[in-house]
Image (tube, rainbow, N blue to C red; front, side, top):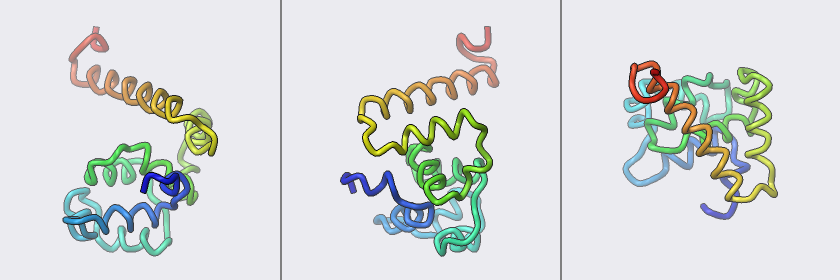
Length: 130
């Protein structure tokens, strides 16, 4: 896309766009994400919401940035109620139309760095484990 539409797309539009890519289908996404095909079809039809774990599983299965999936899910209200206030603030900032690419990249990079540190600590690795 690249024209900013992905910043405004809904969860169902995101899923439709991602599964319409060459080599992808709802069946493949269901296999890769371990989420039932009927559930994914329900989301594509605009019915029901996804929890954080499902959104993350979808993004990982698709090889996409989790922030893109979260933004789409929050654009349609599919999961925002599951977020605490701090996360809602971050998502609102990422959805701000005038946000620069540099700021968006900095926010995502910081969040990814912090998540990676937490993962390392859970595995007993890296500086986070000390």
